Length: 157
Image 1 (cartoon, rainbow, N blue to C red):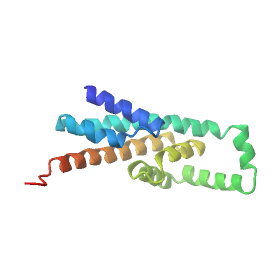
Image 2 (cartoon, one colour; image 1 turned 90 degrees about the vertical axis):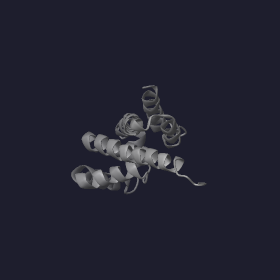
Image 3 (cartoon, helix red, strand yellow; image 1 turned 30 degrees about the horizontal axis):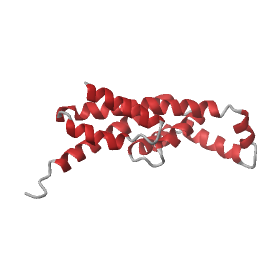
């Protein structure tokens, strides 16, 4: 139970503050825990990450209302570009789903940046939450399974 709570906490912390690294933490705690907890550790870490990224999503959504950003958008073609991408991501759910899934699973584009962008263009919260959770769950589960496989590999036998 403690391992699950810690994985959740580190997931939230690493979503909010990039210098915390859940990817470095999970293999360590995973190798010290019961192998049956692998999916649970991946799930709670993914839930923590998703919760933390919601904070960035909300900051992105609120940031677009600021006078400073509105002034920046009025320069050149920035507003036109912003509105074009906003329309693409909100009117084409497959595109926004694909981008968020890639970001949450592979990390490219960086998920922190994509969470802010998703909020600023008002991406569907359902799409945002589900893709971040699924992508992070798959990423963390593969990370834990890979670490376990490497740990139990008999390299010198």
